[in-house]
Image 1: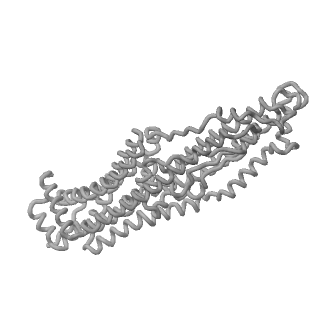
Image 2: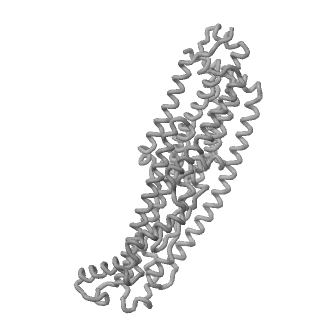
Image 3: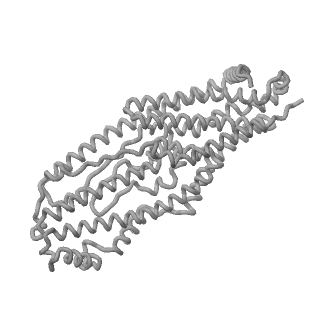
Length: 474
């Protein structure tokens, strides 16, 4: 396959595209949309970063400025932790627009980010939210269809396909040359989007891990563009005319990008339903009550816990314990509450895993589904990243509350429990929340299957185009 011939065909296709003015209209339109997304993202990020930093500093200052008080009062005073937005959220906002970025941490209760709204439906939410991913995954295939739908069918309809082949140009050379032209146009658009994204990364002082994700996102979107170019050229090769090529390509886009994702998650929710947050909270409260209520003096579980504690210390009354019985009671109650919550949440996560498995199966017939999921993961804006943040916040909450309970146990006299106040110096000594997101190399094993699906799509299209021959009019 002559390289010079391929570049000649690609150059000719670019000239034809420019001559017909479609490209002159669509590229400026995409430029305007990219600028709009960039401005909106910059404004939101600046507002959010400023507010987050202000409130985090205010929260930390207020925590340390608490007066001398009972440690259990401090546990109910609570603390707030803020989730830092991924530097790659301009490229793919993922679930960010639909979840909260702050968690309130308090005793006896685990708060989450309204999981019902995003756990099961995040992969098609971006259809209604303008981001870099929306432009690339949803809008750009339409641009490619508008440019490439008559690449082969138009040549045949005008009678030039027979002439080109008669000159010694093979069909493989023709279709590869045309594909190179559309790849060049796609590269221009991707370069525009990723240049803006790189600016945000530089302003945000991103780490090396983020730049590695940035490079992989570019490769992923480039492969996605290649798939849509291949699909459009294949349809154009098989279609009887330009109208059939255009309508068939648009139907493919509608099914793969709009209908199938919504249908997949709707069926997944129907097959594996999730409870509303209020229902989940009620179920968790009931499950805790079945184990024991630390605030009920006659609760069977805690009566048994009291007897075991008295035996362990070799005393007959809680007043004779060398430690504060109420502190022990709060510590055990906190352990039970956290344990039951995790058990309930694991059941919820099992349902979510079933939903994701169902949708992943349908990714085989929609490159949009699998690319969207990979894009979320690489951008650090997927549901899994939100869950990891919540797990880290819960681990910190549990450690914080149990530290306060430990102070209650060892530094508060049971006889003077209510009127005792602990020095405020203790508040600043407790550890602060320090969360570090998962690195790319740790996430890679979970992405391997999706990458394999993308490659299968590409290779199947390549084989189909290689084996397909157009009908040449005589």
